[in-house]
Image (cartoon, rainbow, N blue to C red; front, top):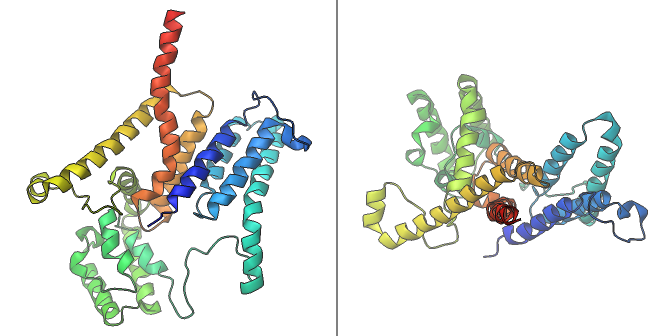
Length: 338
């Protein structure tokens, strides 16, 4: 099975490189378009262009441009720099749209709608976009394992209330209501509009009672799950580490492989954090940090399934930051020897 992350990783890494090389200190090239002879202009345009091609593979890829925009706003916030800021924004926007135009033209011709990317909810006529159900899971679901038991069963398999985490219910009455809704759904395996609205009502009530849980606690827990859950979706391993004694006794080889993947992932993150601290203030540092934060925040807050693979696109930035640990040592030794 080929994942879209492979190509997106390549395009994202290349787009980051293009943006970082747009530093005005880089010598301008010799293109026949004057506005591209300015390194910052060329870098912004190529960053947008690569993000556009990446968006054809994974539609959230323009998040890199949001991170770049935040960095540029922080650098060019003075009125005297607003012209440069506007030009950079236009160039990235034009670069982003160019690869998407053929797809938009195709959708206009066949669907009579302007769609630069596929819509978030793709449903056949008569199907229900599960906005209410998703709003309900957003008030409690943060473990990747719970996705298999709810989101990925919806409209395909029966969903058992016994499989759902106790944190999904604030009271026995609420659990009973969810149980009735799921019992009705299980009869047809098709979520009806009435059932979806009922789940939406439960979600609004839960959020009204505990707004910090929905808007702060769950996104933070999802962020941890995104970064620290072993990525074993396509491997013949369980990915379970707890409880340690039971997992060790049940399948020692599976446990050791999962633990190894967890430790390797942790090593990358520790090195990345150390490198981020050592590289603070260096060119490109702000973009790498902003991209990691923006992408993590997006998937923790706006995507119902916290799949660990969604932050793989951040690893070019993590690796670049981790490399600063070793480059910093070389710079220190060379300075000392000089």
